[in-house]
Image (cartoon, rainbow, N blue to C red; front, side, top):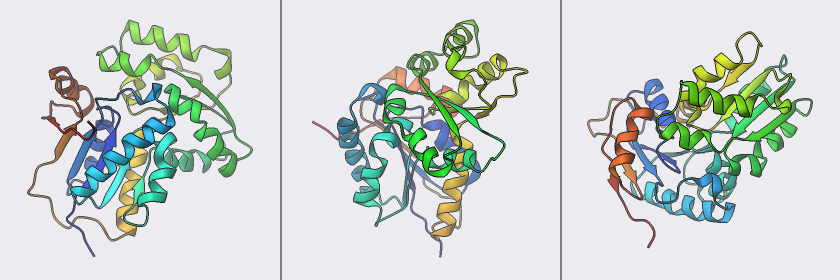
Length: 270
């Protein structure tokens, strides 16, 4: 069985375009409908209750567009709302997130014993990574640190330069991360600062794990298992929606998508 319906992808803003791009690189025949909740970003400073409310509205919007699967392309939304969405909508379609695939990949590496995690305040506060690793790999030590300056820094175009390296150094040089063997970059923005992080860890044998490629592989496996792969390339264009439009949001899509995309504003909340 094959399925021509689109894949729904959502994030608190437009950083999740890195995940959407990776999914299309792996599954070029698929069509995506992307929703960025730009009216409420950043989710990293929101309560879990608020994030679940936003996620419900977005999920219903994507379901109204007949999406065959939903990808939560946001670590904060995954931490606060994945279990809620799975209970409410999981019997209707596959719902995937950006944390489980990383946990699965790292847990399968017996050579890794100490892992660092960096992410937004909401991601780190939720404690989803330590909790899931305790279930999958109780022998693994997880050291987590909120890095709230990184996402806005990247959105302003400050990455792979002196400023971004100075900010990263202030976070990653903390004693907490001494002796880690791997670092999970638990935000969809962070692939753009991977070169900066690699430079800081040069010669220290710290392996980096970021989201887009790992999640794209998980999405491909899920669609294949459920018989939902698209048999031919879609004749319809991808669609990109936001809850609040500004020219700066549209310009910034170049950072995460590689080229500027047209954003259409949709009001889901009064």
